[in-house]
Amino acid sequence: MNLFLVGLSHKTAPIGIREKLQFSNEQSNQYLDKLSKTPNVESGLVLSTCNRVEIYASGYEKDLQNRLKTFIYDFHKLSGNDLDPYFYIKTNEEAVRHLFSVAASLDSIVVGEPQILGQVKDAYDVSKKYGMIDSFFEQFLQKTFSVAKKVRNETDIGKLAVSISSMAVELSGKIFESLNGKNALIIGSGEMAELAISNLKRKGIENIWIANRTFETAAKLAKTFDAFPIYLEQFEEVLPQADVVMTATGTQNYLIHPKTVIASLETRNQQPQLFVDISVPRNIDPLVGEVQNAYLYNIDDLQGMVAENQQARKNASQKAATIVEAETVGFLKEHHQKKYSPAIQKLQKKISMLLENEWKRSFDEKNSIQDESTRRFMDSLVQKILVSPIHFLKEEDERTMEEKLALIEKIFDLRLDDE
Image 1 (cartoon, one colour):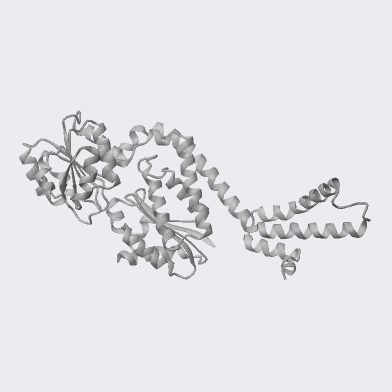
Image 2 (cartoon, rainbow, N blue to C red):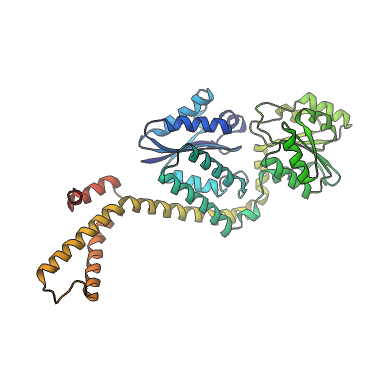
């Protein structure tokens, strides 16, 4: 069985491509349902965020990665010819190392941002609901969570980095000298929006309006942060009062258009407005960025801010990468050992039995095999005999582990013993 990864991210595809291939929660469920009915697929996971779309699966089909990618195209009703260059494909060790790095936030736009681990855990929960987590995937995902925790505990990567939302707030410093006395409009009420509001409050923002399709959700969040809830349809009424406007919704189309912004700026007497679109798909028409006194940034623009603390993060990232590499090697070594341990256990049992039988035939009852020194001698001899078979299994050559195990069983008649 092999592990496969098919995906794309902010490193390989611009936002315009990512938003075409992104999976909503419902679409992730549908994709997993289809995957669960696919022959030779043992497990699967869909990780779809603002910055990446990745499908992980294990199975016995050698070219399963091609089918995974075709499933994505078919699901979104897209042609793969133009999109193939944006994808990366990883198998086995590379796939393990990649997910460890992703969960530890080494592959994020903002290295060290904590949200990605929660998103991996959410994807795991969905896969489990569909019965797409077999014993190997369970071990793989649990190890992923522990590696991410170890990186956060043993490096400064979390202290040095900020979330996407806090970076969005930092953009305000490029437009306004201070946020004290300024107003903000947040469209959306999810985790990204909540983090943005929290960061804006810390920066000294005065008034915040929260617009959401479900008013009760906006009201609950507004109560937490002493803000003003409004219906989504009302946001244009307060838009001219907002110096900072952030969108973070799951809406599939543009909410803010150039003509809306032009009208807002006229009401503001051309006082500048900052628009930050942290949604995928985007909620603000890119043409808004061409309106005078309107400053528009999207998620991809945030990459430019990463360089400001690059050296400090680089040191932490190098240490984190060392941890990820060691944990990858350790996990795979343990996994391979588990694959051959039953054969070694059978061999150990057989050798012990042969030695005991020969001992009893060669010595009388006075030389009891239960004597402590005798038992220690026998155990030591068994371990020494096992050294060569174990070394043979661990040694890298052209044979697969399954072929080596079959050879061990044949040489020592282990299959015959089972019968």
